[in-house]
Each structure stands twice: as structure tokens, then as C-alpha cells.
Image 1 (spheres, one colour):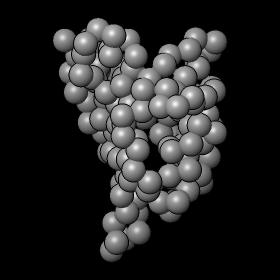
Image 2 (cartoon, one colour; image 1 turned 135 degrees about the horizontal axis):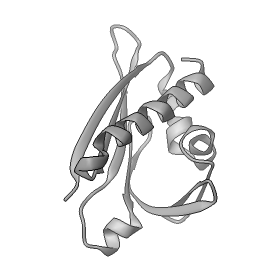
Image 3 (cartoon, helix red, strand yellow; image 1 turned 90 degrees about the vertical axis):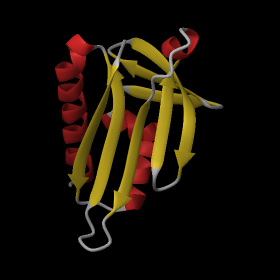
Image 4 (cartoon, helix red, strand yellow; image 1 turned 30 degrees about the vertical axis):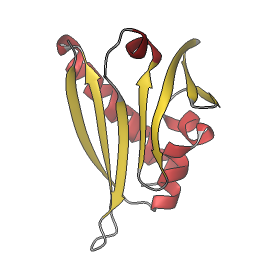
Length: 127
């Protein structure tokens, strides 16, 4: 049984920039995966020649993207991964919240992977 992981990252960027990097296949290809393609609600993520597919469950402009891996869907599991972001009106800093699920033995490596991916995102957007 997988366990829920919740991470939060603060970014100095605009919602428009972040929405493009999270809400579009080309943006996701710059930091999340080597290549991302989409057909209807099905996203294909490629890493080192391996393709993983996920169904888009929710997309809210300037706010949220939520996916379910096809493997989890086929197994009847309710696991998902989600990227929520909002701006603090007082500071102008964007809070990016990640929700994911991982096997108990892999939680630390999953967190490290997300941290590396978010560091790549920060580098690309100059945050």
C-alpha cells in the first residue's frame, strides 16, 4: 500500500509562468520529464526512453494539475499526483504544493526526486 507524500515549495515567479511550465506539455518537458505528449486527456511522460502514461483528472488554469498513472488506474488504485499552486497576495511568492504517493520504502527517494525536479524548474524559470 502506497503512502501519501505532501511537499511544498516557494517560488519567486508569476502564476502565468508557472501555469505554462506545469499546464502545458512543452513546459513539463523542460523540467518534469524528457518529453511529454498529450492526446485528449492522456499524457505520455518519457524518461530515458521509458514512457509512462497518466490520465489528466483535473486541470484548473493558474491553480492545479492532477493526474492518475494508467498502471494505478488499471489496478483499481486511487493514487494520483497533483501540483497545486497559488500566490500569496501579501508577498507575491508562489506556493507550489505537490501531492504524490509512494511505496513506504521509496518515500525518501521520491521526495528527493521531486526536490531535484523542482530545482530544475527553479533554474529554468529563474526563481
